[in-house]
Image (cartoon, rainbow, N blue to C red; front, side, top):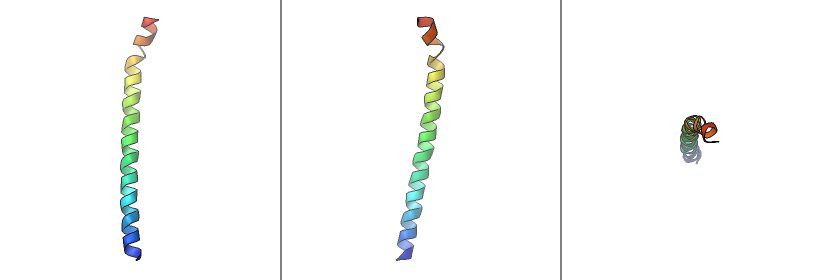
Length: 45
């Protein structure tokens, strides 16, 4: 009974790490978009 649990835990950890990587990627994309928009915001004011 220990093996299925460890396999489940490993699968869970892989999914968690994958989500973490996706979040990091999205965060970088957001920063890029904000940097692209920030020069245009003062010029409109």
